[in-house]
Length: 368
Image (cartoon, rainbow, N blue to C red):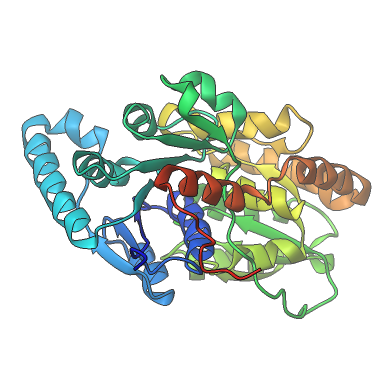
């Protein structure tokens, strides 16, 4: 009798960590008997797992900020989280654990290693996160979105350059209008800075608003305010708190304004869309700036930095976005360059690494 195959994904408190795991899980679901996710209990995590029929387990996690501010309480909390993770791993009995990065992945990865379960880590950014740097010594393999990341990890021999997995976009659907689309992506939680600066920047670009449509992902709580700002600017905009399938919008987009999160960049690259990046300036180790630089240095993106407040940001966006809105040739050049950097095969590459680490044939059920 063949032993059941199950995979447990650890982490995913934000979309940037969660969605690469979802991409891998969607591929593994065809051959696995059971798939589960362990997270901190956000609505995003619970909803994505439930919509696909995956098990979900909530394990609180302690961030490095918590450890600095409340060390004693955080150590007690970390021990409690580790014990809860041990219980989850024992109950689920995974064939392998896949760590998705971030502090939310730490308790479950440590529990897996204590119980002898093989671990693969996913690192999405150019500069590896603190969790990846710490856990990489304990993992059998680390899958890297960028080859350069290998040099920043202590055991580079266990690294595999796979690219960052991207979810299947599904059918594109029909266009509502024939106008080109400007897509604004502030990340899964939205960006207050982009919410304020983009409509203001577009209001400074003359004789363009009637020629374009805008779809703006703004996060929860700001929809009415952002929608009003676009009306005042004279632009036709659809403002949404969250885009369930951003790849479908990317497939229609002519230009994107986005934060420089690694998963967003991977999705843009796979679609091949011109992009203006605004890195989040307070990201740990300034990793979004490093992500943006990687593409800008290869002629595959433009960047406007968020320094000097909203006023300076909107002026920078008006200049850069305005130039691209007016030049189809410039957009095509950027789109072609970033498309060359996309890794649409990343999900399959990660699945192959997971199979190797778990020591199983993932296609044991297929017929030839």
